[in-house]
Image (cartoon, rainbow, N blue to C red; front, top):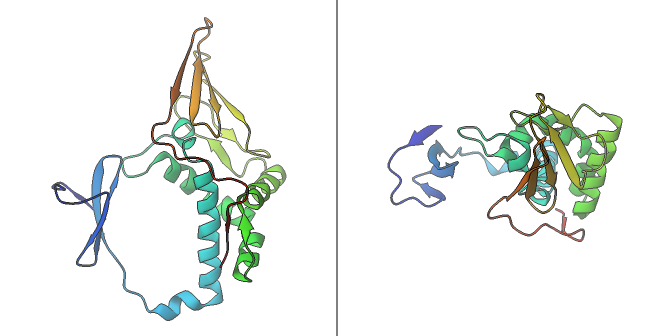
Length: 198
């Protein structure tokens, strides 16, 4: 992966001569698109991987707009990327059974995805990191995704309350003062009837 300096003619995501150009956090990167035989994508293992990818994507889209308040961005990652990288193994384990159903042809709803992750988080309360944002203490998902997430500064200088599914955060200071902010460009949340299947 190489960072590109001159991007005047490139859109957010463009392909030229089998090279993909994409922008993350204002920087444009280029990477060569691999050429793989089509048969590689039709094996049972490949179909399972594709199903897991789709299910994790449903979860990430459902909580889009919240991750900026919960995870720090990195040079080539968005906050959602940081959440996914930190929790990829646990999310795949949580969604394994649903992926098998999807491979078999079942339609899977967002509600089923969220319930599967909540069940896994209840049984494994330190497996899924809910928030890892400086200067706040690490927070884990221990059940269903909460309606509000309270992030506490280790020094006690401030507390941020993230109102989920709205992309809004309120920072409360020890003197009682508060300030609110939103995540710009947040799309509407998926509803419980959204479903993906093979």
